Image 1 (tube, rainbow, N blue to C red):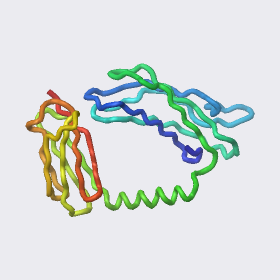
Image 2: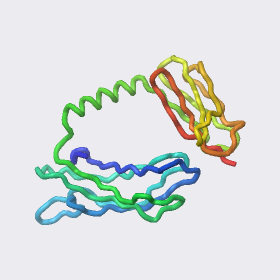
Image 3: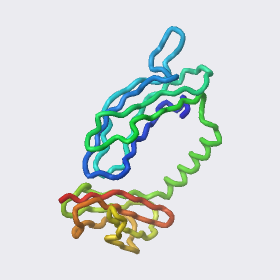
Image 4: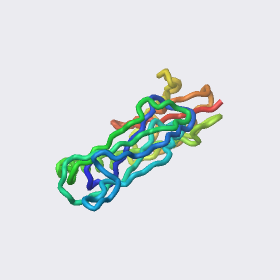
Length: 204
């Protein structure tokens, strides 16, 4: 990341979805980047520690660390983020490294990202399932600016298709899960070249 971006986002990803909330403690550790201001230098980032919670049905969580733009020309610097005290999970790799680059991202990259973001947002549609987790049935809500018909497919954790619907009109709600067994499922909604996949959890 570049120091002028202001925030380093460290993503903690699970190897598979869980039906329980996951918690891990985290803390930052100075490397060549320091979290303390000295007589000779400014601090490079703000140290942090706390607990990250990844809710049931989500595959990842993000730890956000504030990075300081000091305006000093210098080489790449780094600090580490470590994980500990896992709840409902085992930590396979509890160490992450954030490298801080001097200056700003190349303008060409910024222009490409901005252009791509605009293109995606203009044509995007949103998908929401409530409640999730659920016990009897859940309501799938689909909203977007396009009137193009949709295809919906639900698969279980093993990849087996349990429900499939085609030619669904846009901006609608659909009931799912009445005849599903308790477990984790994935709902895939496709509209043209846009695709959304969200987890769905049915409780016993």
